[in-house]
Amino acid sequence: MSTLLNGREVANSLLEELRGEVEALKAKGILPKLVVLVAGQDPASAVYVRHKEKACAKVGIISEKLDYPADVSEEEILKKIEELNNDESVNGMIVQLPLPDHIDAGKVIKAINPYKDVDGFHAYNVGKMMLSKDFEDLAPCTPKGITKILDHYDVDIKGMEAVVIGRSNIVGKPIANMLLNRSATVTICHRHTRDVASHSRDADLVVVAVGIPKFLKADMVKEGAIIIDVGINRLEDGSLCGDADFDAMKDKVGMITPVPRGVGPMTVACLLMNTVTAAKKQATL
Ligand code: GUN
Picture 1 (cartoon, rainbow, N blue to C red):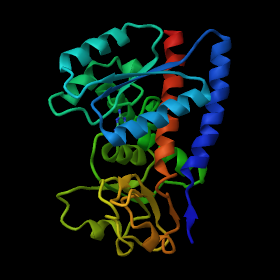
Picture 2 (cartoon, protein in one colour; picture 1 turned 90 degrees about the vertical axis):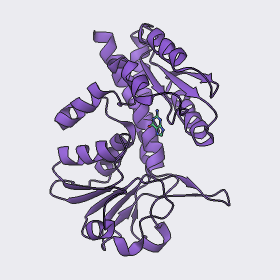
Picture 3 (cartoon, rainbow, N blue to C red; picture 1 turned 45 degrees about the vertical axis):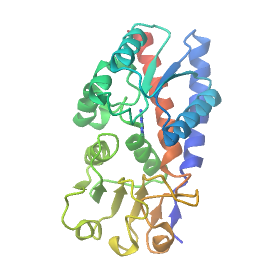
Protein backbone atom coordinates (compact mmCIF):
# COMPACT_ATOMS: atom_id res chain seq x y z
CA MET A 1 0.00 0.00 0.00
CA SER A 2 1.27 3.43 -0.90
CA THR A 3 1.27 6.45 1.42
CA LEU A 4 -2.20 7.89 1.78
CA LEU A 5 -2.09 11.68 1.57
CA ASN A 6 -4.61 12.42 4.28
CA GLY A 7 -6.14 15.75 3.30
CA ARG A 8 -8.63 15.76 6.13
CA GLU A 9 -5.90 15.43 8.75
CA VAL A 10 -3.67 18.10 7.17
CA ALA A 11 -6.67 20.42 6.70
CA ASN A 12 -7.67 20.00 10.34
CA SER A 13 -4.21 21.02 11.51
CA LEU A 14 -4.33 24.07 9.18
CA LEU A 15 -7.74 24.98 10.60
CA GLU A 16 -6.35 24.68 14.11
CA GLU A 17 -3.53 27.10 13.22
CA LEU A 18 -6.04 29.46 11.64
CA ARG A 19 -8.19 29.37 14.77
CA GLY A 20 -5.25 30.77 16.72
CA GLU A 21 -4.65 33.46 14.11
CA VAL A 22 -8.31 34.47 14.11
CA GLU A 23 -8.29 34.69 17.90
CA ALA A 24 -5.26 37.00 17.74
CA LEU A 25 -6.98 39.17 15.10
CA LYS A 26 -10.13 39.38 17.20
CA ALA A 27 -8.07 40.61 20.15
CA LYS A 28 -7.06 43.51 17.88
CA GLY A 29 -10.68 44.18 16.92
CA ILE A 30 -10.46 42.50 13.49
CA LEU A 31 -13.35 40.09 12.86
CA PRO A 32 -12.67 38.17 9.62
CA LYS A 33 -15.83 37.73 7.56
CA LEU A 34 -16.57 35.69 4.43
CA VAL A 35 -19.67 36.03 2.26
CA VAL A 36 -20.69 33.18 -0.04
CA LEU A 37 -23.08 33.90 -2.91
CA VAL A 38 -25.01 30.94 -4.29
CA ALA A 39 -27.35 31.07 -7.28
CA GLY A 40 -29.62 28.09 -7.93
CA GLN A 41 -29.80 24.67 -6.32
CA ASP A 42 -26.81 22.69 -7.61
CA PRO A 43 -26.66 19.76 -5.14
CA ALA A 44 -22.86 19.44 -5.24
CA SER A 45 -22.47 23.19 -4.62
CA ALA A 46 -24.82 22.94 -1.63
CA VAL A 47 -22.57 20.27 -0.08
CA TYR A 48 -19.36 22.26 -0.71
CA VAL A 49 -20.88 25.44 0.71
CA ARG A 50 -22.02 23.60 3.83
CA HIS A 51 -18.44 22.40 4.36
CA LYS A 52 -17.17 25.96 3.98
CA GLU A 53 -19.66 27.33 6.51
CA LYS A 54 -18.88 24.58 9.02
CA ALA A 55 -15.14 25.22 8.72
CA CYS A 56 -15.67 28.98 9.24
CA ALA A 57 -17.59 28.26 12.42
CA LYS A 58 -14.75 26.00 13.60
CA VAL A 59 -12.07 28.69 13.25
CA GLY A 60 -14.18 31.68 14.28
CA ILE A 61 -14.58 33.34 10.88
CA ILE A 62 -17.96 35.00 10.44
CA SER A 63 -19.68 33.53 7.40
CA GLU A 64 -22.80 34.64 5.60
CA LYS A 65 -24.50 32.75 2.80
CA LEU A 66 -26.62 34.64 0.31
CA ASP A 67 -28.97 32.34 -1.62
CA TYR A 68 -30.46 33.42 -4.91
CA PRO A 69 -32.98 31.61 -7.11
CA ALA A 70 -31.65 30.06 -10.34
CA ASP A 71 -33.37 32.80 -12.38
CA VAL A 72 -31.66 35.67 -10.51
CA SER A 73 -30.47 38.33 -12.94
CA GLU A 74 -26.79 38.97 -13.59
CA GLU A 75 -27.47 42.59 -12.72
CA GLU A 76 -28.70 41.70 -9.23
CA ILE A 77 -25.59 39.62 -8.52
CA LEU A 78 -23.32 42.42 -9.80
CA LYS A 79 -25.18 44.93 -7.63
CA LYS A 80 -24.67 42.77 -4.53
CA ILE A 81 -20.96 42.35 -5.33
CA GLU A 82 -20.58 46.11 -5.58
CA GLU A 83 -22.29 46.48 -2.21
CA LEU A 84 -19.99 43.85 -0.63
CA ASN A 85 -16.94 45.50 -2.22
CA ASN A 86 -17.86 48.67 -0.33
CA ASP A 87 -18.79 46.97 2.95
CA GLU A 88 -15.81 47.27 5.28
CA SER A 89 -17.07 44.48 7.51
CA VAL A 90 -16.64 41.99 4.64
CA ASN A 91 -13.09 40.72 4.05
CA GLY A 92 -13.73 38.03 1.48
CA MET A 93 -16.43 36.90 -0.91
CA ILE A 94 -16.87 34.01 -3.28
CA VAL A 95 -19.50 33.26 -5.89
CA GLN A 96 -20.04 29.52 -5.92
CA LEU A 97 -19.58 28.03 -9.39
CA PRO A 98 -21.12 26.82 -11.60
CA LEU A 99 -23.51 29.74 -12.08
CA PRO A 100 -26.76 29.39 -14.03
CA ASP A 101 -26.11 29.55 -17.81
CA HIS A 102 -27.57 33.05 -18.32
CA ILE A 103 -24.99 34.58 -15.96
CA ASP A 104 -21.54 35.40 -17.31
CA ALA A 105 -19.16 33.99 -14.68
CA GLY A 106 -16.22 35.93 -16.12
CA LYS A 107 -18.04 39.22 -15.71
CA VAL A 108 -19.08 38.33 -12.15
CA ILE A 109 -15.53 37.39 -11.11
CA LYS A 110 -14.16 40.56 -12.67
CA ALA A 111 -16.57 42.63 -10.55
CA ILE A 112 -15.12 41.36 -7.25
CA ASN A 113 -12.57 43.63 -5.55
CA PRO A 114 -9.31 41.65 -6.03
CA TYR A 115 -8.40 42.22 -2.37
CA LYS A 116 -11.63 40.43 -1.37
CA ASP A 117 -11.33 37.73 -4.04
CA VAL A 118 -10.57 34.84 -1.66
CA ASP A 119 -11.20 32.26 -4.41
CA GLY A 120 -8.21 33.78 -6.24
CA PHE A 121 -10.10 33.76 -9.55
CA HIS A 122 -9.79 37.46 -10.46
CA ALA A 123 -7.31 38.22 -13.26
CA TYR A 124 -5.29 40.35 -10.82
CA ASN A 125 -4.70 37.41 -8.47
CA VAL A 126 -4.23 34.91 -11.32
CA GLY A 127 -1.62 37.21 -12.86
CA LYS A 128 0.19 37.66 -9.56
CA MET A 129 0.23 33.92 -8.97
CA MET A 130 1.85 33.47 -12.38
CA LEU A 131 4.80 35.67 -11.45
CA SER A 132 6.26 33.70 -8.56
CA LYS A 133 5.60 31.57 -5.50
CA ASP A 134 5.98 34.73 -3.39
CA PHE A 135 2.82 36.19 -4.91
CA GLU A 136 0.48 33.29 -4.23
CA ASP A 137 -1.18 34.99 -1.24
CA LEU A 138 -4.67 34.90 -2.78
CA ALA A 139 -4.14 31.91 -5.07
CA PRO A 140 -6.98 29.57 -6.11
CA CYS A 141 -7.86 27.29 -3.19
CA THR A 142 -7.71 23.79 -4.71
CA PRO A 143 -4.24 24.25 -6.24
CA LYS A 144 -3.05 25.96 -3.09
CA GLY A 145 -4.40 23.03 -1.07
CA ILE A 146 -2.48 20.61 -3.31
CA THR A 147 0.80 22.44 -2.70
CA LYS A 148 0.12 22.49 1.07
CA ILE A 149 -0.54 18.74 1.23
CA LEU A 150 2.63 18.03 -0.78
CA ASP A 151 4.57 20.33 1.58
CA HIS A 152 3.15 18.52 4.59
CA TYR A 153 4.41 15.17 3.30
CA ASP A 154 7.82 16.72 2.44
CA VAL A 155 7.47 16.13 -1.29
CA ASP A 156 10.18 18.07 -3.10
CA ILE A 157 8.61 19.11 -6.39
CA LYS A 158 11.79 20.64 -7.86
CA GLY A 159 12.87 18.80 -11.02
CA MET A 160 9.88 16.48 -11.06
CA GLU A 161 8.09 15.53 -14.26
CA ALA A 162 4.55 16.66 -13.48
CA VAL A 163 1.49 15.98 -15.61
CA VAL A 164 -1.72 17.90 -15.01
CA ILE A 165 -4.82 16.42 -16.62
CA GLY A 166 -7.50 19.08 -17.03
CA ARG A 167 -7.08 22.75 -17.95
CA SER A 168 -9.83 24.55 -16.02
CA ASN A 169 -9.27 28.03 -14.63
CA ILE A 170 -10.14 26.69 -11.16
CA VAL A 171 -7.68 23.80 -11.00
CA GLY A 172 -5.72 22.72 -14.09
CA LYS A 173 -4.17 25.98 -15.24
CA PRO A 174 -3.34 27.35 -11.77
CA ILE A 175 -1.88 24.09 -10.40
CA ALA A 176 0.27 23.76 -13.52
CA ASN A 177 1.57 27.24 -12.86
CA MET A 178 2.14 26.65 -9.17
CA LEU A 179 4.10 23.46 -9.93
CA LEU A 180 6.15 25.46 -12.42
CA ASN A 181 6.75 28.06 -9.68
CA ARG A 182 8.26 25.16 -7.70
CA SER A 183 10.50 24.15 -10.61
CA ALA A 184 8.69 21.05 -11.87
CA THR A 185 8.69 20.28 -15.59
CA VAL A 186 4.99 20.56 -16.33
CA THR A 187 2.83 19.07 -19.07
CA ILE A 188 -0.86 19.92 -19.30
CA CYS A 189 -3.18 17.37 -20.91
CA HIS A 190 -6.80 18.13 -21.84
CA ARG A 191 -9.72 16.82 -23.86
CA HIS A 192 -7.89 17.30 -27.15
CA THR A 193 -4.66 15.60 -26.04
CA ARG A 194 -4.16 12.70 -28.45
CA ASP A 195 -2.69 10.22 -25.98
CA VAL A 196 -2.89 11.19 -22.30
CA ALA A 197 -1.28 7.93 -21.14
CA SER A 198 1.85 8.60 -23.20
CA HIS A 199 2.41 11.64 -20.97
CA SER A 200 1.10 10.41 -17.61
CA ARG A 201 3.04 7.11 -17.76
CA ASP A 202 6.36 8.96 -17.41
CA ALA A 203 5.24 11.38 -14.72
CA ASP A 204 6.58 11.54 -11.15
CA LEU A 205 3.49 13.53 -10.17
CA VAL A 206 0.04 13.37 -11.77
CA VAL A 207 -2.74 15.80 -10.91
CA VAL A 208 -6.05 14.67 -12.37
CA ALA A 209 -8.99 17.09 -12.49
CA VAL A 210 -11.35 16.07 -15.27
CA GLY A 211 -14.61 15.18 -13.48
CA ILE A 212 -14.77 11.68 -14.98
CA PRO A 213 -14.98 8.77 -12.50
CA LYS A 214 -11.85 6.56 -12.57
CA PHE A 215 -10.51 8.28 -15.70
CA LEU A 216 -6.89 7.67 -14.66
CA LYS A 217 -6.27 3.91 -14.83
CA ALA A 218 -3.46 1.99 -13.14
CA ASP A 219 -1.70 1.36 -16.47
CA MET A 220 -1.54 5.13 -17.11
CA VAL A 221 0.81 5.81 -14.19
CA LYS A 222 4.29 4.64 -13.34
CA GLU A 223 5.29 2.70 -10.29
CA GLY A 224 5.98 4.95 -7.31
CA ALA A 225 4.29 8.03 -8.84
CA ILE A 226 2.46 10.59 -6.70
CA ILE A 227 -1.23 10.89 -7.61
CA ILE A 228 -3.33 13.91 -6.68
CA ASP A 229 -6.99 13.22 -7.36
CA VAL A 230 -9.13 16.35 -7.54
CA GLY A 231 -12.30 14.64 -8.77
CA ILE A 232 -15.35 14.26 -6.55
CA ASN A 233 -17.85 12.21 -8.54
CA ARG A 234 -21.08 10.83 -7.17
CA LEU A 235 -21.87 7.36 -8.50
CA GLU A 236 -25.37 5.97 -9.05
CA ASP A 237 -25.24 4.07 -5.75
CA GLY A 238 -24.65 7.40 -3.96
CA SER A 239 -20.98 6.72 -3.15
CA LEU A 240 -18.19 9.16 -4.02
CA CYS A 241 -15.25 8.38 -6.25
CA GLY A 242 -12.38 10.31 -7.70
CA ASP A 243 -10.96 10.76 -11.20
CA ALA A 244 -8.34 8.08 -10.47
CA ASP A 245 -9.02 4.36 -10.19
CA PHE A 246 -7.86 4.31 -6.57
CA ASP A 247 -8.28 0.59 -5.80
CA ALA A 248 -6.51 -0.50 -8.98
CA MET A 249 -3.45 1.73 -8.46
CA LYS A 250 -3.12 2.06 -4.67
CA ASP A 251 -0.45 -0.66 -4.45
CA LYS A 252 1.45 0.56 -7.51
CA VAL A 253 1.88 4.26 -6.79
CA GLY A 254 4.04 5.89 -4.11
CA MET A 255 1.51 8.35 -2.69
CA ILE A 256 -2.13 9.04 -3.46
CA THR A 257 -4.93 11.28 -2.18
CA PRO A 258 -8.14 9.42 -1.35
CA VAL A 259 -11.64 10.61 -2.29
CA PRO A 260 -13.24 11.70 -0.06
CA ARG A 261 -10.82 13.06 2.62
CA GLY A 262 -8.14 14.06 0.13
CA VAL A 263 -8.03 17.35 -1.79
CA GLY A 264 -11.57 18.47 -0.83
CA PRO A 265 -10.87 19.44 2.80
CA MET A 266 -7.64 21.17 1.70
CA THR A 267 -9.63 23.42 -0.66
CA VAL A 268 -11.86 24.51 2.22
CA ALA A 269 -8.90 25.11 4.56
CA CYS A 270 -7.19 27.27 1.92
CA LEU A 271 -10.34 29.33 1.38
CA LEU A 272 -10.26 30.16 5.09
CA MET A 273 -6.54 30.82 4.92
CA ASN A 274 -7.14 33.28 2.06
CA THR A 275 -9.91 34.95 4.08
CA VAL A 276 -7.57 35.48 7.04
CA THR A 277 -4.85 36.77 4.67
CA ALA A 278 -7.36 39.19 3.11
CA ALA A 279 -8.53 40.40 6.52
CA LYS A 280 -4.94 41.07 7.64
CA LYS A 281 -4.08 42.88 4.41
CA GLN A 282 -7.21 45.05 4.56
CA ALA A 283 -6.40 46.00 8.15
CA THR A 284 -3.14 47.57 6.97
CA LEU A 285 -4.56 49.44 3.95
N1 GUN B 1 -16.92 25.31 -7.71
C1 GUN B 1 -16.05 24.28 -7.64
N2 GUN B 1 -14.94 24.63 -6.97
C2 GUN B 1 -15.10 25.92 -6.61
C3 GUN B 1 -14.29 26.83 -5.90
O1 GUN B 1 -13.15 26.55 -5.47
N3 GUN B 1 -14.81 28.08 -5.74
C4 GUN B 1 -16.04 28.43 -6.21
N4 GUN B 1 -16.47 29.68 -6.02
N5 GUN B 1 -16.82 27.60 -6.88
C5 GUN B 1 -16.35 26.35 -7.08
